[in-house]
Image 1 (tube, each protein chain N blue to C red):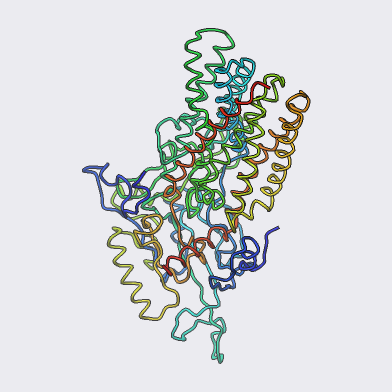
Image 2 (image 1 turned 30 degrees about the horizontal axis):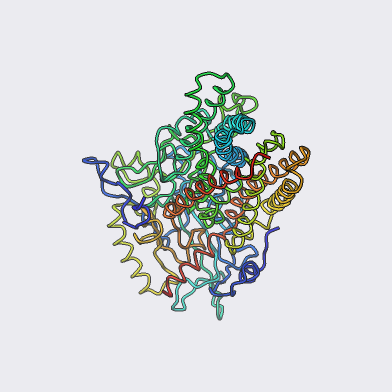
Length: 327
Length: 310
């Protein structure tokens, strides 16, 4: 599975830049690579995050987008779409903290997240966003369901509307603010990719449970989100250069291909027949949801793969040093 | 936030927050040219800090059986066998040893690796509980009574120092790992504390105390940096092959290490990153992208209502 060609060849093959700008020597301690490394061992640690994290990216993104869908549907008098997106959003907001707490090494200490607020830690900022946003949406949903304390419900809906989009995009900063090459190098794109994925996820989730007569905005959000997400995904892989190759390998590659196929097929179906046929609307939405979940898995797994191979840490850093020496 | 982007050579807010309790910044200078690979540092660290056993395995990688720094190895001695001369003046060490005509050069590098106690520490920046903190000595320490094992510091460290400690399941554990019930594996993150407890008592860290060749030198960082410059100059005069300081420069991507090194080859040979950068240095532009993406998401979703209900 691991590509053992000399790294100059790999680099030339992967991003088309001229090979051999840096001189490399082998040592007898290496195992099949020509780059110096410590027994081929990765330099940065792989994350210890569990599969709950990509699940949370999915539910958190959906919740963030649904808050806007709900708010605008309410304002435009589309009450059916408004109610259903509110309930979906509350359900996602109940699932999200369960995933996050279950991921912790010491789940019973989850409340320690609320000891501090640190702008240097996207996880700290995100914990507070989730607390405010999830609290507001579940409150609004409960009051909507019981038809009780309407003014409080409206206030909660407003808070939920404002805090939703940051909930959907901060996870890009969460991944980017690490030493994981494939995440850190994509720091300007990950929030956009996750935002677009959130629009697709939220839109498709709402369209899945709403009849075609009322599901128009959700359907269009799913199609547009899917299109933007696909474009950003391709652009990100290209711009990453050498390290972008992890998106074509292993589990990241497999989930990436599933993501692209499902998302494109789902969005196509929604655009073609989703306006009239309930069956097409539901199956198209389900495909987009599956595609977006696979995308989150692909990005998650790519991080592990890029940490495992020291080339992705060492080569760009050596290049940086060489450039600085020239300058 | 701006302070993160600019190298200052001094940890953020340190030592001002300590007031009269402030101490000089302490650190390690690990001079690998005199390391003999005895692993006394690894053992002393284990003993003093009560670190659990770490897999008694044979790796086949020279004399190295602990492989890396992690939750249960806070000092790690790297062993590198190389077909390179130790000195550039033609003197070589040889496995042949006898009067062979032109012995193939062979050198055996040993390096005791440790947490770098960065000036701008990624682990400390990203810790969402405030468990990681900067001590009055300028070192970076995890408070184990606060850490909830979120694991964010693990990939945030450019050196791969921190790791989550996983202990085997015990019969007392909850049956299916129910999160809030029963005893369970440790799950917290652990790393070198630069023997914070010993420093508090006026002692040097256990590894430095145990090092028989003074390869691990402990002291005030400024003094160690001056000493390292002198040592490097001497090795260069003596013609040592590849001698270089690593992590002594306050202008590097992490603002200089609190624990820096004298190496005999490029950093990556020892499993160290050649040009480490604290991820948080780029956080302002990441937050900017996040904010704009959130606005665009809102605008896009609002726009999707333009085409009517169906």
